[in-house]
Length: 141
Image (tube, rainbow, N blue to C red):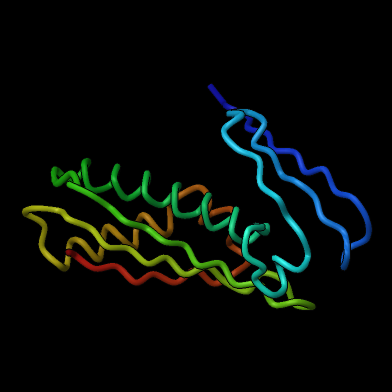
């Protein structure tokens, strides 16, 4: 069974001085203010497409890695995953860096790295981002 998720952005004004809100329609979980200034110079209190993409990438990777670890017989006690998505005005999204810290009892460092890399390659959001470099920095806590 497939699931379609929806989000809507309502924008007012031009690119430079305008702003809007992005709402998570399917879950009704949140609404976020967005603006060009937040995208190009990190204005506090507003988000941007790259931060939202980072949220999607970190959540997806966490699920894929947790599944890979459990399938390996070594389910994680915890995973902390940050996805840092970089945007360069005039160039676009230039990469996503996954920073992972995990507590996984009974797993060798070599198997941990192998499974972490496999999850990076196979998480659905990583697959959707094939046009940009995705890097991984994973460590056992």
